[in-house]
Image 1: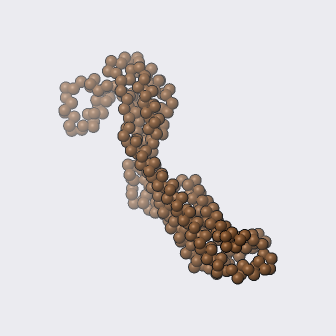
Image 2: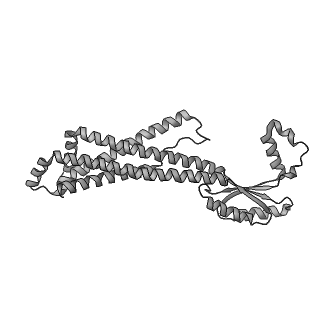
Image 3: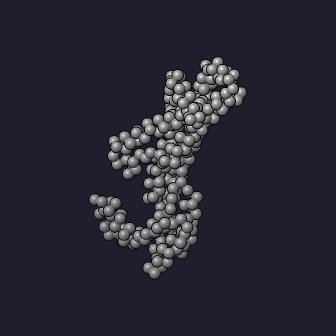
Length: 292
């Protein structure tokens, strides 16, 4: 029963100071809401980029006079390169058919053109290539060194631009996240400080009757934990509902990628971080003003 006493006192204190408690919880919710919003943008950008990354690969054009017996050897060499997931051979004839299909009604411009003018090639899929231009460059260099390969191409400009965008978004999320979390902790500690001032007589009486520091501080820490839990939980719930609604009205999404909510590990980290920072802010306030 003694273990439950701090919780009972915390609940009673919340009931007596419900206005201040609700106001602090709302402020924490708004801070975390902004943080999770930025984090959602970054996560969905990452999902969209990963979709492109699954389609993005390296094209190795072969020499026009490469012998047919050499192609299986090149194929094996390509698959032996670390990071290469798959390789598909595209003959000159197949490349010509693709070009005709791409031109559609305008394919008549290719009449009389020898399909051999298009070199045979290998379309190479790289594992998680996106946002790692250094690895793409290294793989491309190895492919270029294979006998029979004349030229290697990949979406270098796309990779670099997406990498810059992803890094910028990630930095914004990290910086804004730290600022917002510490702001939430500051707001909670300030509110607790005011609460302590308003209850100084009560606390003095508790000290006079022999109450320990942990007995006095316990309910305040419980309140801070509940504020962190409720604030982060409300923020995540709001954006979860918004994401589900957006997914419903968006239909097919953007390039086949629908809006995604944060993974469970992200949400756990957000909730725990908010609780910890709110608790630290409360403890600092109690230590400063009650000299615990």
